[in-house]
Image (cartoon, rainbow, N blue to C red):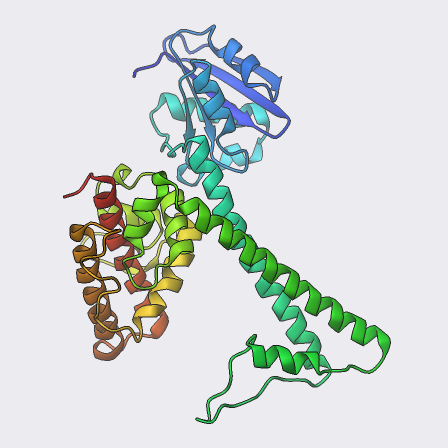
Length: 371
């Protein structure tokens, strides 16, 4: 819908600065508020055909949903797509930031961000809690390992086949429990790090159990089960893909979905000279990380389908398409690694990019928007 008045909102946790720009008269008006969507909506409604925008960021989507509920046309702009003049960076304040947004909106230079509903937004939070706990667990394990190394204790056990045993197994924990460091302070430090790791492990199991229950809801179940047909994609990863994406049909093509994930090649070409580099990384870093991790499963995977074609949980068309995807990705990974001799990390990221395309197709099929 065309609008006459462009409203830029510079949003903070405790305040909102608004600037209104009339596209006909060029008049500029500004106002500062406490964080009160009702007051902001009341002020905006005074203008002719208003439309508001604020930057994506830590303030999330509460304001845009609140303003829409109050009848205000409001969008969230992708901050990564906004290019500010160098001169503006030397005159940064809330009012200037809001006016910049208003002028970008008037010039139709805003790339709109998808706004999830409250249930989807809450599900995203749950998924990101799990990611945070995983990161905390990794750091806690590193701290424990580093303490042991300082005192000369290194896990270096081998199995009967001569392969080094993995860390954090039952045998590894039994080895740690038998360690006694000299001095009470050192031993207390070890006990603390052990209890920290165990505590975070318990948190991780609890949140995974909660997500597994959440996935059973009709809203999520069909799409999660469809994505789980791909090797490397289990319940937690599938749930993250579904809730972070929101609706797969909002992407017109598999390439646009891969681009949103930052998994397409960067490019610096001019004239007849074409130069492409590594992936852009300009997208959802959370999902990109999960897909890259999932792609390692195709290093030694077989072409056999992950689930039976007659699986009653997943429609035949979906499971059949997923089986084709698994076969294709295994062949692709092998071609990149052994025929083209690409470095493992390069081959893996390329596989992740194609995996994203298959995920998009399965997601749309489960939504009924792709035959």
